[in-house]
Length: 258
Image (cartoon, rainbow, N blue to C red):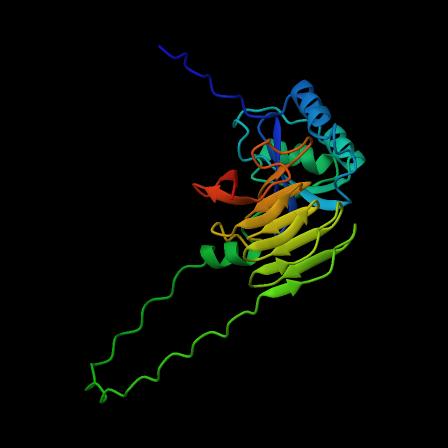
């Protein structure tokens, strides 16, 4: 009888890219030792990967009675590694108070104006007028078709530090994406050359977007904010070979040969 495989424990924190707040730091633990160990492991191979990107701590997965992490220490450690955490979200009042004391902001989905509007009593409904005879139906004009977004095509190699973005559509790259270069698209990304830098598809949340390349050697790949870095070479089945990257169940990144 095959031995049952135990599920892997969740890491102390996870990183996810977002369009609104840059990098989302999802906390699964508030324990200092667990966070320190995972930070050391996570950034061991790529200590200079991030370059001052804004980041937000997400406390939504922490237990309701979890003690506050050492916010000042945690923010300092991430800044040393190139991230710039500035706020927390989904935090309990206790976690939020400790974060504010450490100099962080607290993000809230509600606004004072919305809260005031919700508190005001609803006015009495006006009496309904007597129904009038309906007007003669008019022929509705045919809806205008949305303008097609052209695919962006890049036919020159992208050097370290270069970033190209295809807003609203796909991007096709016909030359190498070198280490340190970044390709971003709201749709899918096609690289008909070595992909050695970063590729972020579905930048506005399109979970159906995909990444295709004829030679996978990427530093980072991401679809709709779900990403993976390659501290070492990709699996032998796809390393330096044609591959595609897609999402399964809208949350699991799948990398497979073409």
